Image (cartoon, rainbow, N blue to C red; front, side, top):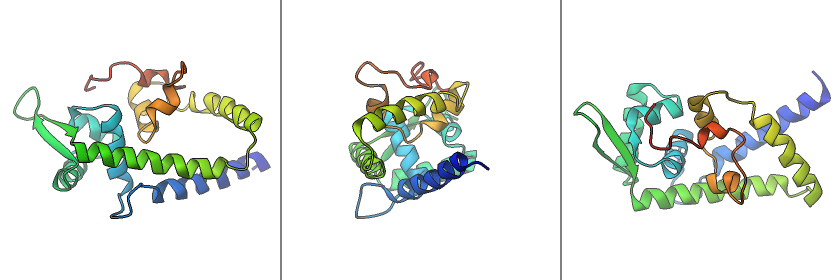
Length: 175
């Protein structure tokens, strides 16, 4: 292993630790799956429960339990899909607020990690991460899995596109 790979591994672990504890609410802690579900639905509202399960990498029973927990908490609602067997899931106002708080906490955690960098260093690191992230997935579902906690406005705002451009199309498809 080279020093670069070793440093990247240490940084990845630190980032993961920070992300797992940054949920934006002092009242109760969200699980990683709950946080990812809320943020994904914040970005891609009103999808089938099965679609959300695919994005989060959960089994049918796993996503059913997760959606039930989120519904019990008052963060999502389920409605009938195209037929009686399908259910769509969407955020409530409280769910949108919770997702927004999670995104804000994530941003604060990442900003703290990047704090030692100068502005030129930050621009260079952004350029390098665009290259790395752009190669993390070649199709839509794996790209959505990579971006399940992303702040869409931060990544694809100000005239920029997500490095995983296949997350940009078909926001309402349920593939």
